[in-house]
Amino acid sequence: MTEQRPRMQSRPMVVALGRGDAVIFAVHHRPVRGTRGTYRVNLRHGVSRIRSGQRHALGIIFHDAQ
Figure 1 (cartoon, rainbow, N blue to C red):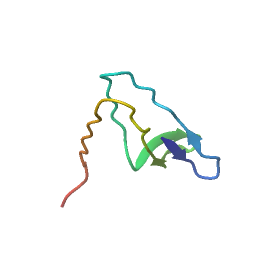
Figure 2 (cartoon, rainbow, N blue to C red):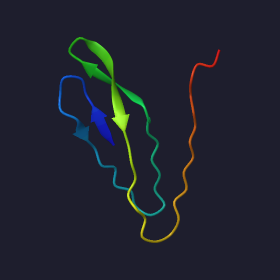
Figure 3 (spheres, rainbow, N blue to C red):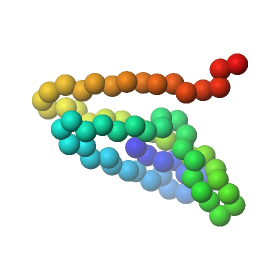
Figure 4 (cartoon, rainbow, N blue to C red):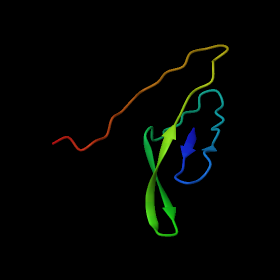
């Protein structure tokens, strides 16, 4: 995942997973605490190619439907 922070360099993060592990992450914005309060940073994400086995993905959308 890569955080695209305002007026700063982007910061990549790698989540290393073992066999049978799972991860849950935000796909668009993430709150970050700054010196003037909390602000949102954009997130970009991707996955590595798998060499054996299967990958399962589940997308859940949370939003304010009105």
